[in-house]
Image 1 (spheres, one colour):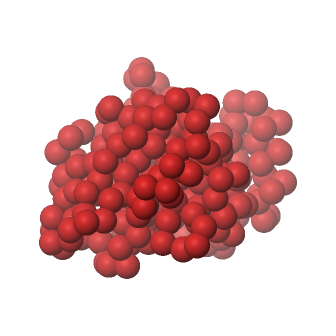
Image 2 (cartoon, rainbow, N blue to C red):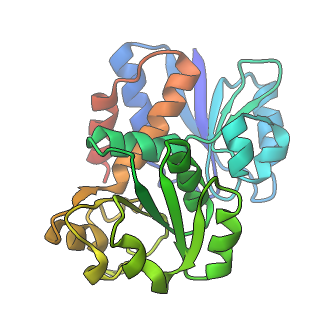
Length: 265
C-alpha cells in the first residue's frame, strides 16, 4: 500500500483527505491519505521521519511550507517561490514542489480563461507569491497589489515583468486587466472584499482563493459586474490534482475528487 498524507498544524479541518481518498477509490489504487500534526517548529524533522518511514508523498500546509524548504531538494518553481507544499519521496532525496501556482493556472483554464494580457494579484503573501509566478510563467503581465505596497514591490522585483502597488491603485490596475486573483484571506471571516466593486467589469475573470465561504463578496460583486467567476475550491482542487498526478503517475479523476471536496464544503 502506498501512503500519502498532509503535515500541518492544525490539520483536523483539512479537506485534502476526502479529496485524495476519492481519487484512489476511483482508480482502484492501493493507497491511503493520512494527516500528521507535528509541533509547530518540527517541520524539517517531520520530513526526515516520513522519509525514514517510507511515506510516499506529503502535502505541506501552514506553518511548514517554508520550514520544510531546507529539508528537501526544491524543484525550480518551488525554489523561485521559496515555499514547498508537496513532497515526493520516490527519489534518493525528498523532492519539494509548489503546486499552488499550477492549481491557480489549472483552475482558470478549467473555466476557459485565456491567460493572456494583464493579471492583477491581490496579496503578496505565500499564495500571492505562488500565483504571481504561475501567471507570469504563462506569459501574463502581472500587477501585484498589497495593503503594504512595499511588500508588493519587493515581490514584483522577483517576478519577471511584474510591478508592485498598493490597494489604492486597484481601480486603475483593473481598468484594462483580464484576470484578477484574490490571494488574501479577506472574505473568509467576514462579508468583506479587498477590491472596490466599482473596479470590476465584464471583461474580467475573477478567481478568489478563499474557499470558505464558497461564494465570497468579491465573487458576488464580480458576477454582478458580468465577470467570469472562479471560486477558491477550484484552486484547492487543482493543487491537489497536481500532487496526485505527481505522486501516482496517473491522470487524476478530477470529477470524483471535485465531488468529494465540494461535499465537505
